[in-house]
Length: 205
Ligand code: GAR
Image (cartoon, rainbow, N blue to C red):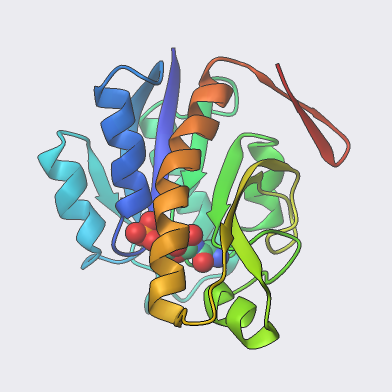
C-alpha cells in the first residue's frame, strides 16, 4: 500500500475529508504523516484526534532557501516512508510554493487542491478573483504539482454556479463542499493507480 503525507498550513478541512475517507476504507492508502509549516495550524489537532502522526516544520523565521526548507520536508517524508517510489504527497491548503527540486524528486506524486477552475484564477484569493471578474461559474481543481504555480496537469474539476447574491464567503463555502468531495476521490484514483499522465493530459481508467 502507498504511504500518504499531507502538507497543511491552517484549517485542514481538506486533510480531514481525506483522512475520514481513509478511515471509512474508501481509499487504500496508509496515512503516514501530516506536516504543517505552522505550529498553530488548526488541522494539527484534527489529525492528532484521528490518530495520525503530525510534524511541524516552522517556516516563519526560516533563514534558508526554499530548496533548503523543502529538504527538511523531504527528510520528514522519508522518515515516514513517503518516498518517490511508494508515496503520495497531498498539498491541502499548504500556502507555500514548493521548490523545483522537490517537484522533480517526487515527479507526478505531489497533488494539490485549488479553489478555482484552473487555469482560471491561480494564486491567492481565487474565490474573490472569480467574483471580481464576474464569472458565472467557478469551482475547484485537483491537479499534479509542477514547477509553476497551479499549472500542473488537472486530475478532477468540479463546477459550482456563481449566484448574483454570492459573496466571497458564500462562494467559498459552496466551493469547499465540492473540494471535500473531489480531493478524496482523486487520492483514491491515485492509490488505485487509475491515473495516467500524458503530457498535460491525465487519463482516468
Ligand atoms: C482550500 O479552499 C484550498 O482549496 C485553498 O485553501 C483552502 C484550505 O482550506 N488552497 C489554495 O488556495 C491553494 N492555492 P483547508 O485548510 O480547510 O483545507
